[in-house]
Length: 339
Ligand code: KG4
Ligand code: ZN
Image (cartoon, rainbow, N blue to C red):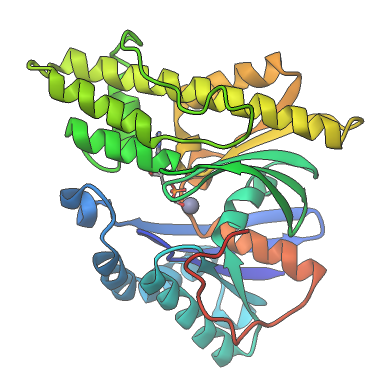
């Protein structure tokens, strides 16, 4: 089975070809254009700019993905595209071009939920069976989920305000250190020490919900009150911010694992961390230690599969098409589609 996947839900224009045969799976191509240059002056993604960039690039990206995979349109079995959640303009471009291809080669079109793309993404690289606990941390979403099986996801908790990636981006913006914020904060944090005390919202709430807007406001207050915003100060803020995030995440994952164990007392505890924030080395290293302490197995995708990509979209189509061979041609984009 050969699947062409397309991702245009935010600021990445991406296409990928995956080949899957029984247990064998291979990413034949995974092409991506990241629009960070176009958005960096605004410190965040501007929907209209993202829309225009997708429109300009999507056909070329798809052709490159096919060329790299050494496949022709007629060899594709399924065309998948992100159907939501995401920015409406981008979703429209991806789904419209996917439908046009589907019509012209007479092969099924499958709209894919972007969050499900992240949730199933470790199954491309790892022999990872259900059930497992998911910490999903992206620029638009933050949630703890139990993935019971394909298509059956139980949300244990989510953010009540900002997503974690958004908190990284907004904090970087107020420190004036660049966009996207995650990688910049990670870089500066390496030179700093966790010497600045920051609040840990909802850490004692005894549920799996998150809140990050107070943390960001607290950083803002500290930054505004500091006259000399030296590089050392910025590094210390970034380092303290990452340690605070780590503490919050660990506490919530601990609760998540307890719920997991109650539901599955005889199963090995498994936890995956997915989404753009999961590409952060500091978090990856420390969550490994956390998993060992909590007697659980941790799976984090390779960095290029943590941030947005089309391989994870193609992969969901592989998994779902195997179960149910459907063509969803009448689908319309769902910007607020939850899992
Ligand atoms: O999953 P993703 O690529 O797109 C969404 O689905 O939103 O996540 C993007 C988010 C951005 O907010 C970005 O700042 C964050 O992931 N991110 C990081 C790192 N790399 C990307 N956050 C922390 N550390 C990183 N190294
Ligand atoms: Zn994403």
